[in-house]
Amino acid sequence: MTTLVPLATIAENQVEDLLDRAFGPDRHLRTAYRIRSGTAAIPELSFAAIGDDGALLGTIQCWPVALACDGGGSRPMVMVGPVAVEPDIQRGGIGRMLMHHMLDAAPASGVPGRDALMLIGDPEYYSRFFAFTAACTAGWRLPGPYEQRRLLALGSAVPDCGGVVGPRLREAA
Image (cartoon, rainbow, N blue to C red; front, side):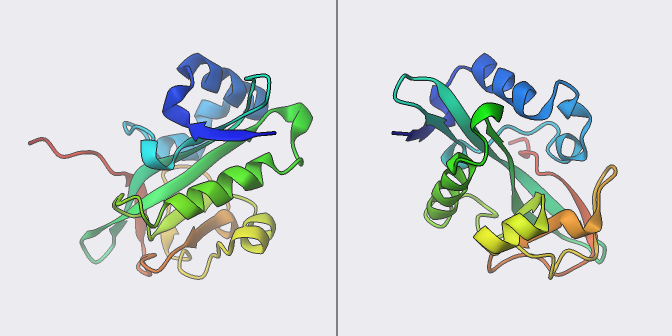
């Protein structure tokens, strides 16, 4: 049986090792890392899947980001991902379980942007299982290479303006 726990309860080196196995050690060069640069994962929306033997099987992380609209203003969003699963057990439903758990937790979380989720991913998968679409993302730009069709969003407050997606940093008090 797989148990889901807050990601904060897992040692950081275990998470990093899993991410390396799932995505490769050059994963830090991806555009997603630029988007969330300088931020910390949102604890209320980041989870780990643990096996009966206590082994880390998968993780999901969510990040505070914003869309800086071309016409002015900034809209808070939550960037979903990475969703990482041990390579030898991928396609076994753990990633889907983590996504559903996060989507169930988001509405009650109180996290700014919880109703404007975005990710970079396979539209055939994320639209089929989770209803993410590119309906509002055509005018969005990212700080690095990406395929526009893979820029997906979900939620009642997804911004429909053109602009640049980047990290949402905490303002100094």
